[in-house]
Image (cartoon, rainbow over all chains, first blue to last red; front, side, top):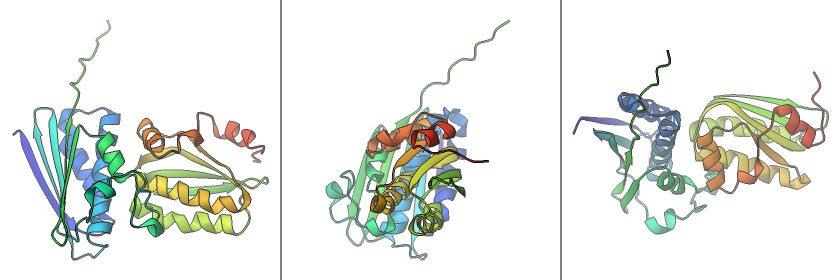
Amino acid sequence: MDNEMTLSFRAISDNEALARIAITSFLSILDPTIEELSEIKTVVSEAVTNAIIHGYDEDPNGIVTVQASRNGREITISILDQGIGIENVTKAMEPLYTTKPMLERSGMGFTIMESFTDQLTVQSELGKGTAVTFKKQFQPVEEPLYVR
Amino acid sequence: MQHHIEITSEKIAIIRLGGELDHHAARHIREDISQAIYSGYVQDIIWNLEGLQFMDSAGVGLILGRMRDLQVHNGRTLIIKPSSTMEKIFQFSGLGKYIWHDTEQEAIQSLGGILHG
């Protein structure tokens, strides 16, 4: 393991940006492409938003934890909450399925997370919480071309 | 998160978004935009995402919600200048057909309007 990070914060929506900034800094050593970085930021944002609004129903007493580790160019990130849990994970992962249409949630969160990662696992237990873990292999950095 | 709404005399709203659009930001701007639609000054919407540095599925929710608002008078929606990551998100969500690879001016013309000033 080359590096690890753990970040915990209250379930307030302001912290969605905080999680993205922390992950951006953690990944900077990999010199990711703009697209790789924006895709990972999107995945983290989706999972953290889910934890805040679904796991805790925006109760600021709830704590969301983001764990990240780097092994070479492979990144593993977990987003953990001890909130209400997901009753039916398979259903929750269906495109366009949402339990909060009034909040204009599109139901696309898990589809985006699956599409932008190499591997995604969701573990959840009612009343105990949810863990979303994903892996992503970053492309090698291209050698710069020097032109005389 | 910044947003700027310009409404042409043909009732086309050009909504220029800047900064980061997530769930937190979306709920702050949703009302502003809905009000313009409900007040009857807006028929169609062009979303210009050129200044947007980040967007997650909250952007999909925001745009789909306003499309529902516009349905009352068959208003049209165009999305211009999304980043490649945003374009993928729109494709996954079935909004790909609303993306136009055009300038704001061309998008306005295609909706049959003229931008004054």
